[in-house]
Image 1 (cartoon, rainbow, N blue to C red):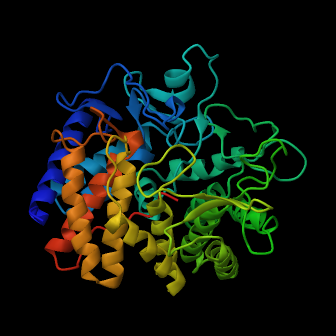
Image 2 (image 1 turned 135 degrees about the horizontal axis):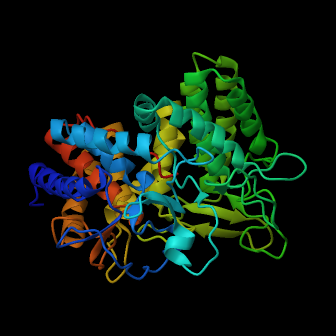
Length: 472
């Protein structure tokens, strides 16, 4: 190994400098797609890589959910100019980009802030299907919004956080009984009608639970507490005898990708969100917090009992029981829509371990970590930057938790490899082999992972930059 921690941090800081400079034209918001050489926002959308959908991209705009990990890194690096730039970004977003019809933010999977037209961006109409009739942009959380981010947004504009929590009600759909959908209109005050599928993925309920927990603690609003109880009960009443949850609660039998499929990673994701939410609520609603922890324990048990094979490196993300007993396993490198790499779920496992001290979760994450030490990085595969960033983040977090040198040594070796693959220029490419920066592909997580492993190496295991557990 020839690279040093200081050399890695220099790379990270140079990339941050470029992002800050690129954001100056847009009141501090970082553009989603940038030319690697000129650092200007791309005017034309490059073709999607394999496994990427145009309806998930933020062209030509900004997406806070994409940038959360790099903003976290900027605060932790301790430089006044980075803190000022992060504050400028979040202040601009909180006070300029959140006054939507429903209060729901233009961020996440299918919406963004359109930088050139200064409005809510719609990934379906503006990016994927320009001839499609204009309709409301769609909210989908994409990942968990962390507590530190909610604290920042609340400090800049408390009203926007309260209105967002109100707007989450639009994720409930029209019909008899309670059913939610992961999509909700941002610019139209209406509840979506139910289709053939519920699309009520379990992990999204965890996202809303943490959102409402934060908003309830800040506002004491009874309707937010009612929403919490309703959502905490939602999947609990639909669990199987092992505590596992379906990918969605209602699917037509002919839809073989969803009907009867147990969502193992999502079951763990909901458990982790319940644990974090319980910590937020503890001093205000201890009874609800206790219930959250007990139910999280059941979900975690179900996930750990699922048909993984740690010795063979088979980490199941979904499972359809029956005669065939079909198991979908996560890859180590590379992802596509609907199939996460194993590092995603291993980091969620470490998140839950930190909140429970359940050694089984650490053992599961270590089994995945060993694969990242010994599995060769693939050639000629456009591996998104998020995948490698979270793989690096996994090794960094395993070292932070266990203090075992193999994780730090392996992380530093991987960091050197990734710099060679992703840093053709001073700004990281969005995926291996492509020639542009794109926030939707997750370079924010790559910069976070590089900074975290370098800080751990430089400071003898001490690190001001915490792990990022939002990708769950």
